[in-house]
Length: 477
Ligand code: HEM
Image (cartoon, rainbow, N blue to C red; front, side, top):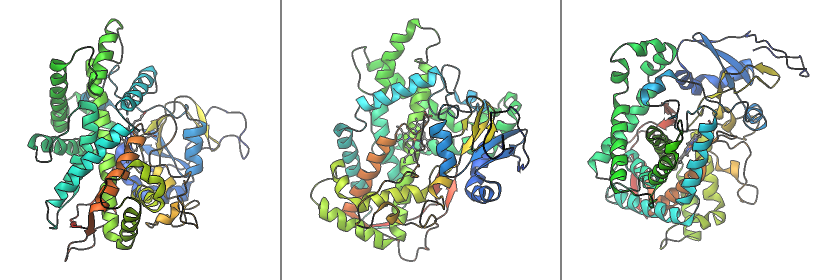
């Protein structure tokens, strides 16, 4: 990557050269997959900003807290766009139905992001009403775990069901029992859909989009996605039959109201198709991430019984065993708070976030970067930045504690990213992580089943970095 203007950056000159190129022959998500393994080494060799050749196009990788902060905070708008993926057209995304996560930086995205944030707040995000809903769901989760009667089991499905119930009740006004076969099928389809989207064939289509023109190709590759869309279609149809203009039971109702208001405005992003895309975005982003983090949480508790024991002690001291945890407890629980932060830092579930794209010509760390360049923000390199963290590659809750055992915020704690495209559900996720985690540890001690090999600490990368399947034994306290 050519540094412009020598040591002190001079006036921005146009031009772009790529001296150290690394050849990758697959799409961006696949680079993401390689990322967790290769990028730390590459940034040591090539610096904090380097380019990768992605078949016939280039992309930029930004590494380390300093460079990431410059891109996403100081030059927030310059890096706020998202790249265009031709496969998205076949997943239902369109010009006025871009959803939120992959929407281009535009009026449509602003409108939908603002609407999603304010509507989720109206339905309780960051408030007591939602807190009670999460606590109740944590109660259902604990009962389900209790019914395993101390036998070894894989917590994956139960956690997924509990977490998705929270977002489902916000969006569709519904929760599903853990033995609901239809919902189990949906969650399974969601996982398959994520695998489809990040699988080899999808990546091939990103770099060779004309393959999408072959009749039958998109349908056969995105089978699960289609079924997920059909399921949400049903939920929306149900809403339409029971909804009137005065009613706002959930996010879908609020969106339907906006569709009515926007009927005269051609080209509005409040339309039926976008209702599907926005709600699917929120549902996917809000389920997979939080539930994966909780699965890492239990895994780390298995691997570090001494840390689990300290969390138990703090729960007993501050909350006791007779009442449910509440968000107000958090300030009195510095150790548990530090453990949850460390789970997110070390678990590093979105190592390369969601791809960004430059909105205009810009400059980063002295390098010229043209408009329209895909930019991978290596969040992992921030969460494990050797210049910042004392023990970047160890599970060490003390990263978030001072000498007196009080919780300390760390500027480089960026699992939700930062800047204009930062995670929209951070508040909800933080609430869920605290309430689910403390409820689980209030009721149970988690053990590694006898004879089971120590679970692997490295993850499997698809859309997120997830733990390999493991069994757990939950013993009532
Ligand atoms: C532990 C849980 C979570 C983590 C670690 C996480 C992380 C992230 C990250 C890294 C991004 C990309 C930011 C960027 O492009 O720079 C993101 C975006 C997003 N997240 Fe989350 N997230 C979590 C939970 C949630 C929840 C619960 C929701 C649902 C309400 C949500 C909704 C979104 C949306 C809609 C975006 C796209 C924002 C935009 O492009 O404007 N996330 N999240």
